[in-house]
Image (cartoon, rainbow, N blue to C red; front, side, top):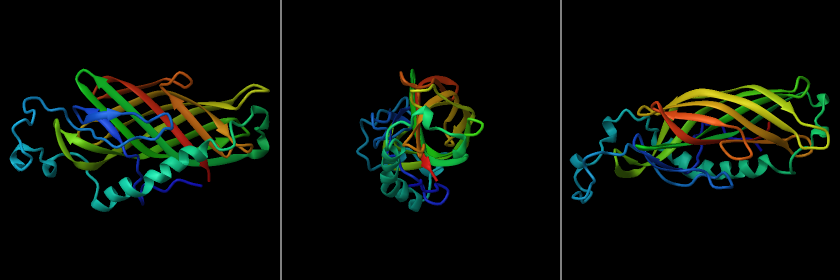
Length: 259
């Protein structure tokens, strides 16, 4: 199984985001699946209490917003098609159980992996968040025991903007995250392991995420046909995310399978 190319068919995470640069945010569940929600700028003065929903002048004007709003076709693909692909990828990436370190061999050569990367981040004061999903591509070199890749084509579904509810809207993030300095390792008798540095920035036209840190993971299946990595959880690496310069509580996951 391989992930679909988000440059051709926009993927879906159906997400939950809390924000002032974008609304209310929730991270992936334990299964790694994000839930429907929104992110939008938490407005200041107008709580919407006297708006019955009919007055365009009282609601956010997305038409003139700098948000990178995708086309209707991309919106539908994000929400309806690739949600299942993302869920399937999470399951497929860990199929067969963790690969024992002793099963990794230079004879495996170079293996390419394709999947998804999810970043969640929340700034508590003022409340602003993001919950984005992108395409991840990685290459493992089992001869040199190295790993590297990139994560691109990040998108997010938002349901609030400027503190007001809006129809569920999909926005695109420009930029990419680089996955570098990966080291494949482990000890005899234990499962395989790897570490990867991550860095880069993402921008949806309204807010900017700057990401850095390290993500840790393992290969799965007898032939290392899948990989799964975490950061920001007790068993994973440490990730730092700022949203428009403000430090956020953040997490990251990668789920991918061999091409």
